[in-house]
Amino acid sequence: MKQFEVNFDGLVGPTHNYAGLSFGNVASLNNAKSNSSPKQAAKQGLKKMKALADMGMQQGVLAPQERPDILTLRRLGFTGTDAQVLEKAAKQAPAIFLACCSASSMWTANAATVSPSADTADGRVHFTPANLTNKFHRSLEPEVTGRILKATFADERYFQHHSHLPDNEHFGDEGAANHTRLCSDYGHAGVEMFVFGRYAFDASKPAPKRFPARQTLEACQAIARLHGLSDEGVVYVQQNPDVIDQGVFHNDVIAVGNRNVLFYHEQAFFNTQSALDEIQRKYGEEKLHFIQVDTQDVSVEDAVKTYLFNTQIISLPNDEMAIIAPTECQENPAVSRYLDKLLTLGTPIKQVHFFDVKQSMRNGGGPACLRLRVALTDQEVDAVNPNTLINDSLFSRLNQWVDKHYRDELTFDDLRDPQLLTESRSALDELTQIMKLGSVYPFQR
Image (cartoon, rainbow, N blue to C red):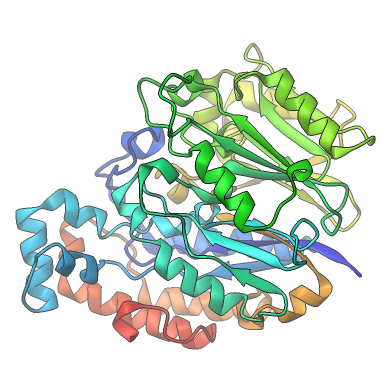
């Protein structure tokens, strides 16, 4: 049986905009109110997906959410026709209105936590959508995310879907952005590393002071129980509170792993050595590659600015590992110098490939934010909805779809335009037919 890591990238939605909604995410706040290009953003994402598929990777795509979110605006008391709801919300509660226009589902690293069949008690792949309770605009996503995941991974013989955790800050869950799996091969049992920012029920424990810790230990433990993971296959690691206060809002901004490699900044974790010792003990006799980047080589500020750790580490068909990095890493002298050095250190990482994902980067998400990693056997790949897997035909079809439906530029005034809502719904309705997803959106139900 063959095993793969399939990356499911989020397709950027038609309302991609810069509202600066994510407190604690420096890039998001710095670029607030800039004009955006939804068409360019979607095409940048598709180009990355196709490039990885051309490298021999299995590559999938996940559909975006319906935005503006009229259903939520109605729940909050805005009435009338859809056009009147938009007008009233934009005028009376602009902050709420902008949150309901966010295209943040493009960052599918926050879509869910996934445990492969090799790790779970029932031998199925388990999915739990993230509740994303820390940010209102993201807390609107889990139900539709769950429907999209079920439409993508529908075969109950292989896939088990859970509801998102309770919508409460005690169980704040940000999905795969705080979850890393280490293994000798994707189909072998591994160690699932859950990274949390705070203890929900014990205020005496260390926690950040400036920016919020979005993931709780209790959420991590709940997901491990839901997925049927053994105690010997799980490690809970606390994120360094000081690094959260420097703008590291998720673990995948300061650490990333793949198979037997953990690539991390020296300030990433609280009690680093004890965490690494536990990971190695539970992993087994084979030596893991712990690649620590020292502050003197790359500062936390430069790591956040360039998203050095929000890169993807992938295993190529020739078994070499490659880093998929944003061009910002190439443009920063310290980070570029470090990556050149990394290739000489004798680690499994032998290549670095740079991609232009600036439309995403300006909103606070790099290459790793854009993808949900799903380790699958060949049988499980065959059970995935084939219309969600990137090939030449789907790549061409989706680019044509973007050209047909997306605007070149979007301003804040455009978001209240009823025509944009009509355009977005028309686009998503056609997309569900292209990808054979069924009626996943509220306007279709």
